[in-house]
Length: 77
Length: 293
Image (cartoon, rainbow over all chains, first blue to last red; front, top):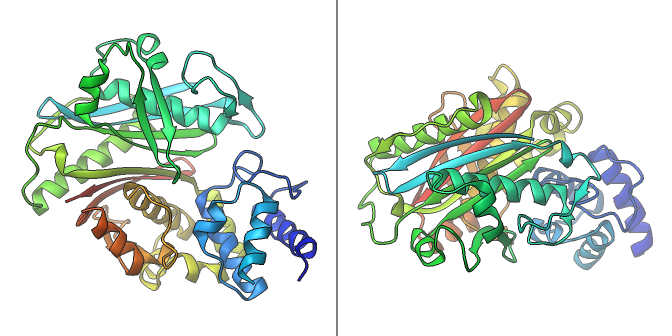
């Protein structure tokens, strides 16, 4: 899966799971989306279901933006 | 902004304290800059500002208020290490005396879920002896303290003081967490399929018999997060939320069991047990944890 395609899917998942809107690849996980660790854990579960791969929570928590998070997932596929 | 602080003193020299701020500036998108040192003089998000100020309020309370906030705050910074774990840094000229503060080894934990910022500090004088061994009585005493402090800072807003017959040197770490119950409600109602990845079968079974599963799970999650924060580490690669099992939240005798990488992490930190207290304030679940040796 191309990173651009994966990013679009990730944005869709974040908007649905975190009840957020106008999310972009540049959206910052904490500052803009106000995600807590619970949200990251929830997203990790959804990513595993959607992409069939387990992404370490530590790496997701280290992502500054949605784009960074997409890169982490690509690296695990 | 509402300040609520609670503090307990151990033998009059070491203390555990909590502070909560209800901060309207923490609304989504709000940012502020302060030049008084309370945010290290940099532009930070409101969330960080709120937790930093909560940490300083807790520190001030734990010190027994020998000076005012205006005198202390400019000389104290709250810095996060590369894991995001917060710690106090004291600048030259600190009215409490930087060398003296170093021997007190202040420990700090912060949490935020708008509009609340929650902080807990434990101060221990370095020269005092270690708690030799854990006993149920002592652990229950600590849990009671945490529970009362949570109640104080979240519900009554009154500062209280008391003495305990335990030493704070046994405290290897402190952790707090606050989470809106609504975050769990959406999971329980719409994405129950992910719950097995977040909560163990025993935790889900207990939640199932609670009056409100989302409220119960919010407390459990806050307790898990608080326990993890006591270890001041990144999440181990081979561990997740299932590596921390929290049971007994309903009857306030919280039991914590670690598994896999999380148990190894705790051992590496010299931690052999935890005391945890949970509380509910309106639509928020909160927890405080102490890691002990």
